[in-house]
Amino acid sequence: MFAIIQASGWPIWPLLFASVIAVALIVERSMTLRRSRVVPSGLLEEVLAELRNHGVTADMANAVAAHSPLGRVLAAGLRNVGSSREVMKEAIEETGRAVAHELERFLTTLGTIAAISPLLGLFGTIVGMIDIFASQGVAGANPQQLAQGISIALNTTGLGLIIAIPATIFWRHFRALIDGFVIDMEQQAVKLVEVVHGERRG
Image 1: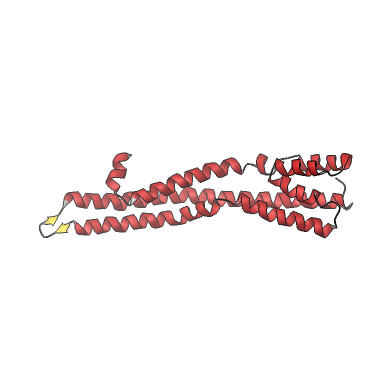
Image 2: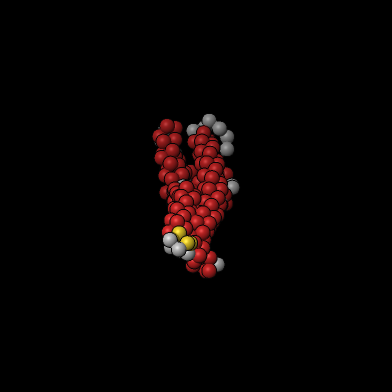
């Protein structure tokens, strides 16, 4: 592996740096964007049961908010239980936008890596081609420089694609996952509002 890196020259280092960042982001987002952490099952039922039995208190709302991203959305509604339906929905929507933004953290970086990795590979290809043309002298081709140029051109192109393909797959996967979480949170928040305002049974 080290021999391949050495043969590829300096154009491969930005790609290696990008690959390390991409792997770290994929691992971090995979751990963070688990359904059990973002939209835990049974939370809304627990909140509604507590609401019926004891009403809303500041401690209860804070405990729900600290529970999960869904809890933050529901807590925004609980803190406005005494307000009108519109005010309660506005508070939930504002918190929901903030929660969605936090869930999308680092996805822009991962998407950028997926987009620029093939370009970095192409840049390495151009550098390798320059070396290949530079190896052509009056006395003929310099075999060592020719081999180095070919190594740079092929290795950087291959590594760029190796990074870009999984990064793109995971970026799309995380985007779809977050969209699903947001829809789920919206549905549960609407149910909370309707139950509070007597438009629906829990």
